[in-house]
Amino acid sequence: MSSPILDIKNLQRNIDQVTIIKEITAQVNAGDVVALLGKNGAGKTTLLETVLGFSFPSFGSVDLWGKPATQIDGDIKQRIGFVPQQCELLFGLRGKDHVELFKSYRNSWNQALVDRLILEWLIPMDVPVGKMSIGQQQKLAILLAIAHEPELLVLDEPVASLDPVARRQFLQQLVEIASDANRAIIFSSHIVNDMERISNQVWMLQDGELAYQGGLDELKESVARVTIRSEKSLPDCLAIENIVRKKVTGTETVVTIKKWRPDLQAQIAEELNAQVSVEYLSLEDIFLELNS
Image 1 (tube, rainbow, N blue to C red):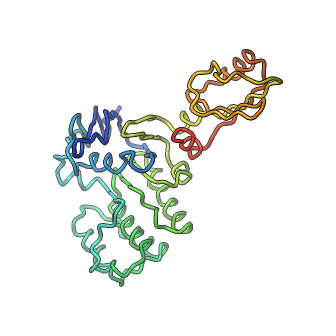
Image 2: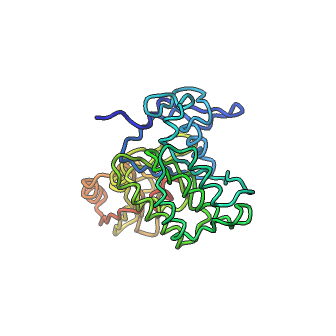
Image 3: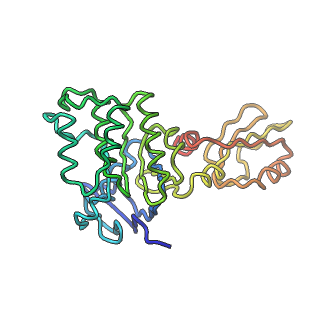
């Protein structure tokens, strides 16, 4: 098995004596498309900045292609594309000026891709960035991040300002990138449905800790909304493990259970002498259930 692109071990980040990232261990391999989920303040941006070597770990380590992220050289930086949450483009330069500037620093550059996306995404290349709409700025930032076809693409809320049509166009391009088994993507967004369409891995941050890391399919199979119907009222404290949410209406109880197993359906029905139905959830619903 090849070495991971990204290797995080026991990572902790403290800022102003507050622990933002807590003991995270994770890897990203070629072919991974990681959906990074978390509420505001969970530590997503801090994690991505540390992964890219912008900040030093307080404890633990972050390696990119086997080298500490804070010590990577120009060759490794050429293999990375990044779209930050805040626009960092030069407002006095036109779109075409940015393309020429970024192109001059890249060892590889897919001009055909650039030309196609400029037309498809309607990016006004003769307009200074400062006079572009926020959505146009975001499209340009994404274009500049993918034009050199990076092996690792890191996206921090890249579609927040895009309209639905632009978001769909961007996701189509992301699907093309994700289809390359030699490349990897880490994608943070509050639009969870978009992430579910392209991701195969999920990192769920809660208060700086990885509450879940693993396959998307495995996550969707391990969380279920279970409806229990009985002829008489059920006890307040159900003898069911890993309940994360419960709602009782008369003789009907609806519970959300993590670490769900299909054999539990018959077990619960027998123990409670009740009818039990199971609903598997979308990634967005799972996120809401586990974070409410």
